[in-house]
Amino acid sequence: MTKRADGGREERGGSLPAVVFSDVDGTLLDGSHRVSPRTAAAVRGLGARGVPFVLVSARMPEALEQIRRELGNVGPVVCYGGAYVLDAAGAELLSRPIALGCALEVRDYVVCALPDVCCMAYGYHTWVTSDRSDPRVAREERIVGVESVEGTFEEHFSERGLHKFLLVGEPASVERAERELGAAFPNLAVVRSSPILCEVMDGRVSKAEGVEAVCQHLGVSAADAAAFGDGRNDIDMLRAVEESWAMANAPAEVRDAASRVTALDNDHDGLAETIFSLI
Image (cartoon, rainbow, N blue to C red; front, side, top):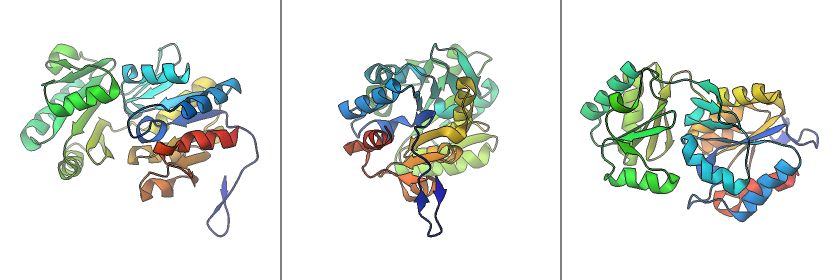
């Protein structure tokens, strides 16, 4: 798509994109974190036309398995906000972990300076918490359908390091965590994915890089790709492809970053209706 002189957008051709990338929570899923029948039908429609549909999420691989089954999805996945990218068979296409020494420093900083946020750590296929009884941990387990494990980083993460921290708390606490942790660790990417969630990853990590890794794997160009998202951590992905849609429920800064905005939000099949308009 290209901009018109009046600031609007002109549609580019009528062909389908070579690949479609989609954020998960707030985009693909409704407000109850479910896949609607209409969305599943839309994704299957893309598959029937030979268009891969790629999940791009801050979630771990195991937290995407049930969603993929409901969609009949067999494509690559971009996990941990772009830090861990796998092909359809689960083979690694890209991995950008935080070194274990740095991860231990982050953990200690959060414990001392940000005691009112819950800190969870993810690496490869492992999710570690210090206290599974914390209601914030229980809520996250319920949403993603995966159980965490208790223990120390030294017990569960090797010299390979880990891919992501998730900080959970009240909006004011999470905003402060983003600001202070970002200043204390400028080599890391620290970004709020929602008012109550903050993701911390290696500074090189982005969903855009994950998109590029998948495009290279599939032998297509990002210029022929489309993407959907709703959060601040989706902005670089939306800017990385030619055709991008911010969800109607996205904040203004995300809508401004996209080529278009869906007519409907994630609770009213906004992604599905847009896909149907394409096919």
